[in-house]
View 1 (spheres, one colour):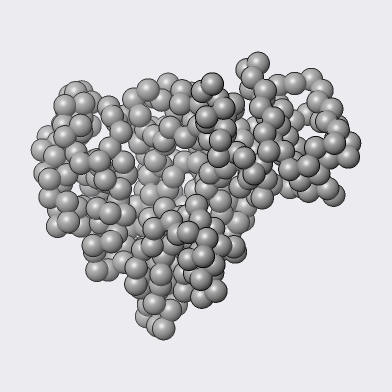
View 2 (cartoon, rainbow, N blue to C red):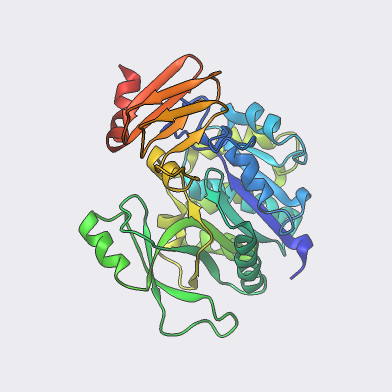
Length: 354
């Protein structure tokens, strides 16, 4: 595998504000330091691919409204590698745009596509899995998606059903996909977890550029036609003008519906490297270091008394003292304070709009 052909595509256009008051539509979670480690989720995403993809082969696709934030947080991004969507059209048009642009530079490109707002606890195992998958796709027409080994009956993730009866001859860790499953109800999720061939869909994809471009041509010809029309304009001063004109014509469709559920050569790489999509305060609590009373604290000076099962995220306060809470979120940002039961966090958006 030629490292020069490896390209990283980071999808950073989401508007998730489920970590309110820290995250908002103007500053979604990928651009904030949720873990309190001094780096945003976007910056951590770039970091974990060091040694897999060269810096000059990193691409970020985001909304036009986040251009300044991306360039501020990733000041070393190559010129022209921050792609700006004029409107939201889900992941298929996003991936098509960057794939066609990469193909004009390197028709032998081997691409990994990842969200910008996930966490990975075991970076070394993550790098091993990604590298192995990219070797598998470099000279084949295979599409690989990562399947996270399910540790609980999670209703917030989609699932991948794999045919575990026979591994791929060229990589014994990779299996064919039988089906993609939508986010299940609890009973269905429990049934999935009881079987060893159901995995969480992490939304991380690996393919070579010709595979994904040809798949889009076969399964989504209207979208493919739009980015074929763009070929004379990639890497020119007129590119953004043409994107602004043509991108809104794309169907609003995910890559899962557009390609993954239709193509034949779809494979899954079952993996376990401490992954979470950090979709909720509860998932942040679950994936963070806890004290003896199951509390997670992110902040400089937090004192807890008779408190357990809580997550406290107070990085702007000089001192925080809490007594007597069990199972709560305590979070502040820019003069806004949230105190909410973890079991009620799905109502936070409603509370924030009142």
